[in-house]
Length: 203
Image 1: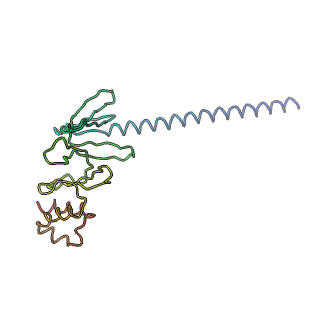
Image 2: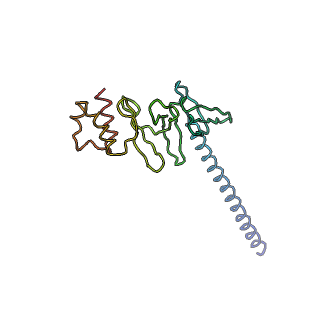
């Protein structure tokens, strides 16, 4: 009888040890799986980051770094997966496609703050880049996200009521635009809608 009880006790101990080993193996597998998933996600993020040159050539990158010295054209350093490094001037770049720290994916273009001034080239988020009037969003220091328009009749930030009125003065020279948007609808908050319509109907 005692022998049977001892065997049962030993069997229970063996079962407990086996369960502990199984838990450890499962935990290790879970940690490995999470690490692998994170690694795959990082690799996918890196693979989707790239720049498009003015020549329309596409350069993929693992890391994209920006630098600019005072009163000089900025530079972009591309670091590829094999650690190869390439450097391009802002004036060589058309677009940059990348993830930011917040995890969101952005498309940006090099835009001149002042017309025909390559030193003023700055990256801006693309809102409308097809048509005679291009619209961007920029976040200069302490100003918050601000619309920036590039066209042959307006070039600059649309911040103040004066900026809006100056832009609308030109947009209203288009008859279809006047008919589509009455004075009450011609607001800064409707800028994307208005410029999209203008590009489609007033060129």
